[in-house]
Image (tube, rainbow, N blue to C red; front, side, top):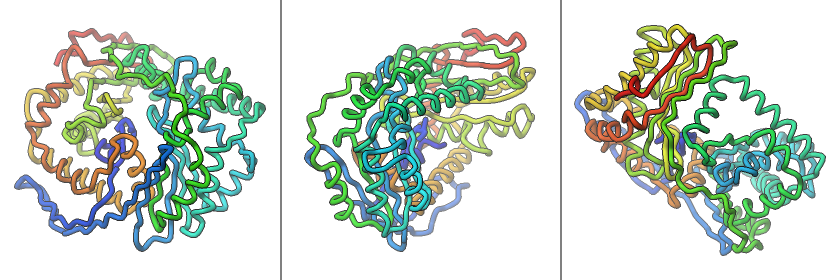
Length: 470
């Protein structure tokens, strides 16, 4: 997914990021294309900023955005902690706690949590990323107090029954096995470990069988008490919501906590990246799976919008260079694409392809060809305008979804410490030039920093640094 959308977010693009949010002041703006051949965005759009922010003395942040005309509320609690904040011995504990919070509280059993969630509409969801853990649900507006009570009870009062934790360890170990049986996900984990050697960004979010099996009640409760302290929480809602009501509800559950809990010692600094050439043979696979990676601007970088447009042109959609060259013109792959995984202080651009082992060399060469092309010549005005139109449309369409807006609201608070208005994002997108994109390409796509991973029945496939020359 485009990082601009993830930052309306998130990274992520990874994720991503993922992942990569936007919330709004009253403004009228006419969005005109910057190039002669581009479509002119001439319709005047009014976006009303009804975002309110309250920060409690204990560090808890409460954000709301009122959206007129809705009878629903998207509500969530986000934690400023993810797998990046774990020691090697605790690898996977953020993801483990995310699961364990559904196993019951002092007031509710696991069955009661599931039943109440379904009664409220069945939209309760949770996720763990490298830098954030999130819990969110969407309900009709008059059910918001009950929805908040459910979420807050889960996060603040987990039971962590030892028998339940043992059962959940088994569930997560089965999840690991599923990833091991999914070649693209397996390659992604192996490659991250090689690309971020010795760093928590290189460790799997779900942990390992050894670490997860060690998470007893004492370890789990101790980590939870620090990671889920009020200062690490962001409560957010969008839709037909009253800010004062949500503040009152949040204070009832989290308002008594202080802001003096100990700091988790595993907050890792920016990693030193490697440039691995990782070849993993798995002869039972029908396909060969390929990753090409390079450094990329972070989620906070001033170049993130430029990078997003460049990534879109190279491999961000069905009109992208890679899709057209490899899938449409030659039929060499079903799955082909590219994009940026962005974290707060670092980024990684990846090209991924799944193809026949017989086609792997050709897919690699065509992919490298597009990287060289981006370095050696500016992207065309028409390609850049298409990427801009796609990103701007996605931002504007996201404004119609309370779920998108509340997620963006929370993630921007965590990543940027501020709201980024839609007009600011759109102006940043529109200001990108072909020369900007070439500059980012020349910075990121270099022979010494280019990395490669391949997995499958590779038929003697091999790569050296000389072959990756840009």
